[in-house]
Image (cartoon, rainbow, N blue to C red; front, top):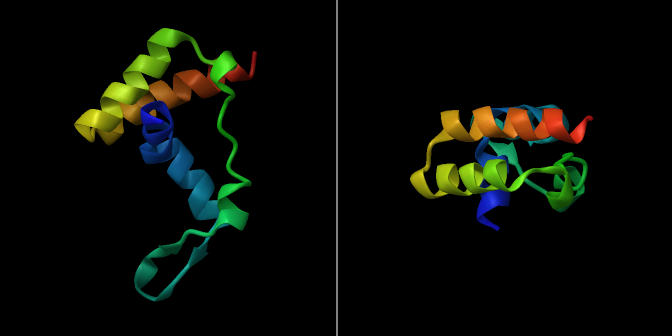
Length: 80
């Protein structure tokens, strides 16, 4: 779950959500299951353990930059 949290806080994933979601008044995003289902996150088997651990740590630390860095690595690994 912490690894998923790292993915969700990454800027890469945020850009997917921005593209798919609905912006409400004031610029806040409306998160609904129908939009979140469309966000592509690599399967756990497609991401190596080191990257998963780094994403979990970035979630624990609340470090968006580190989460973005490792999410991009995970997306590249998943595309191989």
